[in-house]
Length: 491
Image (tube, rainbow, N blue to C red):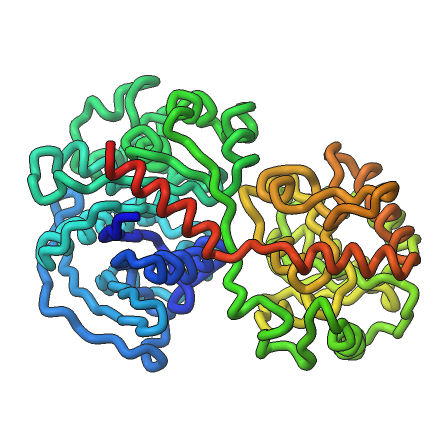
C-alpha cells in the first residue's frame, strides 16, 4: 500500500488528555498506522490539566491570531514526538479556551462549558491555518466527533479554493452519536459561514432551530465511519438509535462504514500488564486466581470459590443499562454472585449502589471514582464482566475482558454484538453471554445462565480460553483504516 501523510484531529488523545474511549483510540491508532509506514500527526488542544513535565514538548515557532465572531484570539503551538510510535502530537494553545482543569464540563456547575462552540470553532480554524504555516499537506485528514467536525465543513466552504488542501480527503469517525455539539441557533454566526447553511430543514447546520456541528460534519466529510459494523447499521435503522440524524446518515450510506476499535495489548494483556499483582496467560491461569484473591481482599468481600465475582467498570448512566440493574437488583443479588463496581456518573445511580452496598455488604463493593489501577485489577480478578447497554457504539471493556479471561455478559448492540459470541451449551462454542431484549427479566435470565455454566469448571475454562484467544489488536483495525485511506485517496 501507498504511504500517506495522515492528520488526526480530536479533542483528546492518550496519554495527554482522555475522558474515555476517544482518547484511547487517539493514543493507539496513530501508532498502529505509523508502524504500517504512514506519516502521522495528531492535533489536540493544550488543556491546563495536562502535566507537561512528563512529556518532552518543544515550542513551535508559529504563532498567529484566529478570528472567532469578529474577535481575534492568539494561538501558539507545542509538539511532542513519540519515538516509539514515530508519530507527533501537536498541541493547540490558547489560555482563554483551553487552560481549564476539565476538558468539556465546568466542574463548578457540572454542565458543559457555555463557550464550547467557540472553543472548538477556534480549534478547527487554528489546525487548518497551522498546517499551512508548517507547509505540511496531509493526504488524509481524519477527524473525530463533533469537536473536530468543522474541518470538513471549512475545507468545502471557506477553503474550497485554497490549492494547499487540493489533495486532502476527509474522514469523520463518530465515536458516540449521542454527543453532537448542539448550540442555540443565534450562535450560528460565530462559525463565520454563509447564512444559507443554517436554512431550516435543508441547511447542513440546522437541527430543530439549533446549530448541530456533527450533522454538518456528516454531510461534508468525504467518508464517515463509526466504531463498529453493527453500530453503523443501528444508527441508520431508527430515529432513536440515530439520535435524530437517521435520515442524514442514510443519505451517506454509500460512504458510511463501521470499523471495530482495537485494543492496545501492550497495556491491556494479562501476560504484560504492569498494573496487576500477578500476570498470567491462557495456558497458565494461576495468576488470575491469585488476582481474584487480591481483589476480594481489597473489596472486603468474603472468599467464595464457587460463587462468581462479577465486575462492572463504567460510566453510571442510562445508556449503559443501569436502569435494568436498578429494576432487577433484588433478583440479581438473590443469586449466588458477588459484584465489584467501579465508575461515576448520574447521581441516581450513585445513590442506588450506595444503598445496595448497605443491603448486600457481603455481595457488593462499590467504588464511585475513576481508578485506572483498580480497573486493571477488576479485569484480572473478576470471573465475569457485565455490560447490559441500551446502546454501545463499540465498547472497550468487553474486549479487555475477553483477553483477561473475564467472561463478558452483554446485550446484542453495537460493538458488543460484533465482538462477543453467545455461548452455545450444546456445542461448547462461544466467548460470552449475549441477550437481545432490553428488559430486567432478560438480564436476570442471562446472568443466571452464566452462573450455571460457571459451576461446570471444564466448560467455564474452555469458555475463558476461547475469549483469550481472540485478537482485537489495533494492527487489525489499522489495516482496515489504511485500506479505506487508499480507497479514498484514489477517488
